[in-house]
Image (cartoon, rainbow, N blue to C red; front, side, top):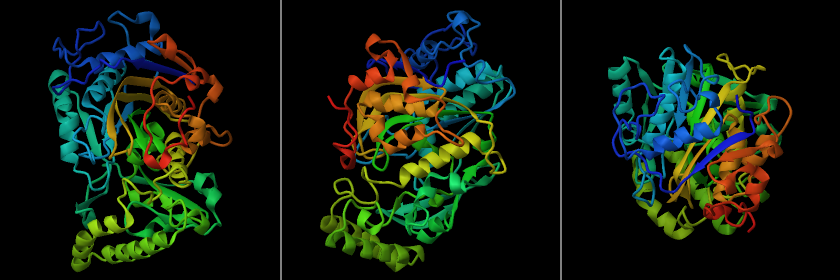
Amino acid sequence: MPKPGDVAVYMDKTVSYGVRAPFHPPAGFPEYRLGSIKDESNTAYAAVRTCLRLMGLDRENYGTPAWNPLRGIVQPGETVVIKPNMIAHKPVNSDSYECLITDGSVIRAVVDYVYLAMGGEGTIVVADAPQEDSHIELIKQRIGIDAIREFYSQARRFEIKFCDLRDTHRVEKDGVYVDVIDLPGDPLGNVRVDLGRLSYLAEHDGQGKTYYGSYYDIDETNTHHSGGLHEYMLSRTALEADVFIGVPKLKTHKKVGVTLNLKGLVGINGRKNWLPHYAIGSPSENGDQFPEQTARSRVENSLVLRVKSLLLRKNPLAQLAARKLKPMGYKVFGDTEEVVRSGNWYGNDTCWRMSLDLNRALLYANAKGLLGEKRKRFFSIVDGIVGMEGNGPVAGRPRRAGLVIAGVDPVAVDAVGAALMGFDYRRIPLLARAFDSGEFPLAGCRPEDIVLAANREDLSGPLSRLLLKPPMAFEPHFGWKGQVEIAR
């Protein structure tokens, strides 16, 4: 088994995603047991395979039919949750969804090696909770999940389960939520997890902050984060799984700097409005919504909060007025992709805390919502073949990086991913604080223990070496520029 600080990196900018679902491998690899069908366009599959080799998994059997890289991580008969990034069905300000969501080529390779490790005995669930206004059927088409499931059903009579973990879908028109539709959510239900004093948000207790979640109902968000209470409604499927495999996308993020494994766990929530995204107001007002208090920000907040209160009542006239007036509001107060608001800047002191809370819950909470000493087995394969830079996680630009990153520790993997993008993990609270020691630690290693095994000599070695000369310089979200980049 690799150590927590061992991270594998494969980088080749010629790698491409497969063009046809179900994304068969490009060659007849010795260990492949699902037939002779090949898709030579799918070099992403081979990149995942190479990354598993670089980790040294089942090294003695590599190149033979006996090679089983995830043996020891996954056992026969177990339940494995594979969580890709399926945030939205379409990007903002871009025609390419390759940079938006985890590609089906990478998902297929992960599924194949999980199936190999469990010897066909067990349960594989591909699951995520996209944005509440996202259309799941379009996302499923774009990742080809139904074709992958059908292939397994025919080739092995094995069911790959798929689960949209959301409880609600919010109908959006012209940037305004006009209706809410109930969804089935996790078939096993959700689990209420209260982290209390173990929450990273507990450091805010007693400061009188008012949090904003994902929806207009501010009271709902703050009901679950007040008086020492810090609770989340999490997927039982995720909490009960024997192994959790994150397959995130390599992207910048407007509220936390970068999104890979750690931020991606917003996708195990049934109730997204329980997630504090920012604190209302500027720092001088005990918030982190805006960088500073100005006459314009005060007027904007007063108007917007009043309108959202009306929208919460689902008044058709208020909805129509909001839809018509929103473009005018952008002209007066500035477009969200150009002006810092909603906690979209480096001073957001809320969202990273919520994200780390979710990681603590996933790693340590049981199906009753109680934290125990047993840490869940975790594995990660990052899809950075085409990443996103700029105004991520949905409004950025494609960045062809040719990267696949693998490891057994989500904190180590994310720190390496950030460094490869040209960002210093020490300047990103989400990553820096993830190395905190104490009760129920998130990182299984110290930063100085992180060592890269790569297909390129200049990328191999300790993380400290990579911080001296990263291979790329992703552009951060405009609210983070000048705050996270590695000095060159």
